[in-house]
Image (cartoon, rainbow over all chains, first blue to last red; front, side, top):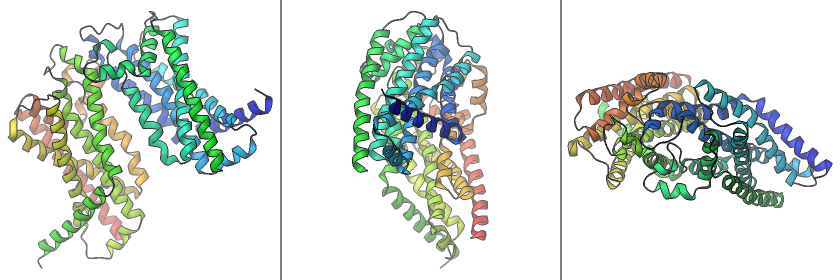
Length: 256
Length: 261
């Protein structure tokens, strides 16, 4: 990766973060959204943790793992909205003219989406700890959880970028948000996978988010299982979505 | 032509326009039909084990959860009514209407009739899906009639919130901005668990003061208990108060806006 390439990516990243944190209407919803779900699930459903065979040590920690992955993936999707908006308003075209390697634009947004997680994670983790969450895992386990969340953010950003670069309109927002929202909720959100019933049980077993969620919850409990599988799954998603995003960039180039 | 028949003609004309506009926008109707069913399916699959908790009122989570689909679709009607009127304001149709002998009440009633019809259709669709999935309905045929009436009043109430937003802001975007707030009302209610089983004190307090809890519990009582006068009276009282309050507020705002136009 040469100097100008990285410089372009960092420029896009800085511009994205500057726009994000100077417009409260853009970053406040992305912070409030996970807090709302944390309060509604960990607060309202805590008795579900007493259900027979639930078998997890702390319901708030159980829900926190989902909320962390949800907040991270949605932060990636929200960055996709910014890409769509930039290309709709002509900024994307100017960025393409200013960079020799257009993939650096995608890299810039990816770095920006990852950087915004620092604030999201601080707020969500702080709220969960204030809400009485017990952390059973050690430092390495926690690093594993946040790594899974970071990688899911990158995968979601690349997915949303692929849509944004193809449609180049903020009107494509639901196409970025809805599939991610649906795939998140088709994982074991409320109870462990073994307690799911009906059609959602086989659906969750083939849902890649389930592997990430199960691994994050096992790390939080200090009893890691399926962690390697989770990393393979999320890295596979990133590889797939990188191809999707870069082919979207080529479509944007062709459109001019 | 008498005054009342003139009003009826005006309401019919506006209601016809409202229904036609809805039918011409499947993209606006389909999500409001599909999304509550999706959330129902996810919750039933995920929370079925909650029925094993001591004190849970039924052993069928779908019977318990079906009630919130009606409220969720009513919340969508907030958006539909508000966006419809905001669109009329934004594109100048409202100003042209002010120049005609059209009464404000006819304009409002027309917007809401379409919503009520759609709300009733949705109620029957959700019931059919619930029955197909094995939900019980203890109150029988009479209960279904009461459910349709209650859902209609709730649709008017939430639609009234949309009208108030549209008349205050005149902007479809502002009405859209209300959507997350309405969702908070739903999630911070007794939609997923009965209030007596909510362990977290602050959450239970919120569900106690959240009117949406009483709307859900009235519908749920028809399914689980049969005829529970306490739950039904509370649900109807909240629904009627919401409908009357929001219609009165929107009538006042409409008069002000017509004077300004």
